[in-house]
Amino acid sequence: RAAAYGIVKEGGFPVILNRTRSKGKILAKAFNCSFYPLSDAGKIKADCLINTTPAGMYPQTKQSPVNPAALAAYKYVMDVIYNPPRTKLLTDAEKQGCRIISGIDMFVNQGAEQLRLWTGKNPPRLLMKNVVLKRLSQHE
Image 1 (tube, rainbow, N blue to C red):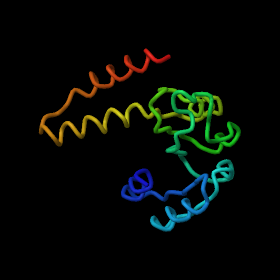
Image 2 (image 1 turned 90 degrees about the vertical axis):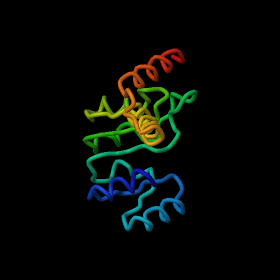
Image 3 (image 1 turned 120 degrees about the vertical axis):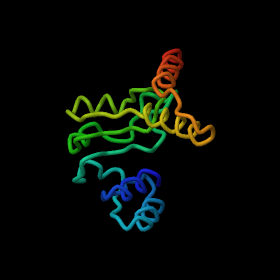
Image 4 (image 1 turned 180 degrees about the horizontal axis):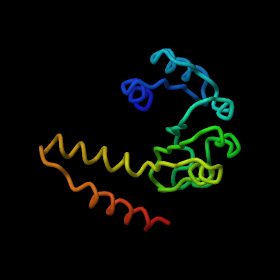
């Protein structure tokens, strides 16, 4: 929902892919956009695929929500998962020639923005990112 909202707010046109047909249709209706089952990911014409499912998150790091061959249809692939920083989806996407975006930056920037709102001060985003990366590397 947040990804679709952000895309619409910035003037884009989201396409909803969902594992559950009923939930996907409801979300697509809320944003006046198209819906397709997740299995159709390779048939969609779009610039970017954004994964918001938990597939591939630690400890199930061998999972991916999308067939690797389907990723060639996209210029960018973003995974909101940040643990691990490089999911199977992102590894597969890079092999298909996509530019990839990890969930780390989103995670860090969400936390930083919360701190800014609560304290009124600009948080040290680079330090925060380094701390997150160091902590996550201890899981690998």
